[in-house]
Image (cartoon, rainbow, N blue to C red; front, side, top):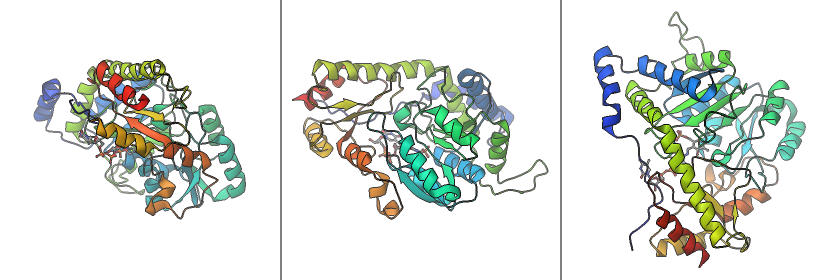
Length: 368
Ligand code: T4K
């Protein structure tokens, strides 16, 4: 039987961006906030954020996180974040001279537990430099709570690496006053190779971030703030524009795959057997399909079972950050939910042109 790989990213084909490449040849602008970057930022702001706030492209989301944390952090020692995230989140805090402080997640939506976060905020007081929630696998965060933190002068940087395209025009992060960082990595729904975007409802913040992503240069070309080279090249922006041209289709394909998974899970009565899908999530442009195996089972058992049937799957985010060597000594709240979920999580194959019969085969294999 034919193998089913975990991911088969499909970045737009070269024919789709040849016209944009010709513009680069004509203008001889290859980087440094050139015309294609400008157009990409303007179109995203208009089409996804109703022209509210501002955005700036970056060369990847990790750079975007570092720049945003460095820009927003207040004096203090800790960056509060979930452990159930990709290593990029705690690494970005460390690059900004902060210590990650891990907060447990909720059992339903797998996002940071606001009650535990609040307890940590009370306990740590002014030692908290920044809060970094992760919008887990593209789900919607409890934004009114995070807005309330901003009003208490607690900086918030949202790791929205997997979120771009998940909520379409009614983007729920629209107008948010903190920094929101998206990844455009090849494996994401808006996959363009490497790239990312920082959005904020706060236009001054984005102006500062643009400056810090260009060596901290002021208009007089003097470096007057901590900066680095976080810019996106015009070639990448060309692919970004071509992707934007067909993004609705790409979103629809990924949403449909999610629907197929949910239907197959229902058909095989997996919930009755203790399997769980993420709660509070409706339309998501899935990067992969996350699901929990029954309590007291181990994800690795199913990974092996799938592999024996020629199906590749992963276990994002297992091990969770606090179980990885780099982060194992950082402080945390209790992490019982993180432990449970990371032991049970499976990341099932998704790509834009995966077929219904392949999804059915994957879910059937789990059910047998
Ligand atoms: N915050 C969060 C919560 C994130 O999830 C991420 C990234 C970030 C921040 C940082 O964003 P960036 O700085 O990357 O913009 C992959 C992605 O590289 C990473 O972007 C993503 N999260 C993470 C969840 O997944 P790896 O190291 O697990 O990828 P890798 O190389 O094992 O590839 C995954 C699968 O995709 C493999 O089966 C191979 C396949 N693949 C991959 C690429 C790149 C292809 O078939 N073609 C390709 O071009 O991190």
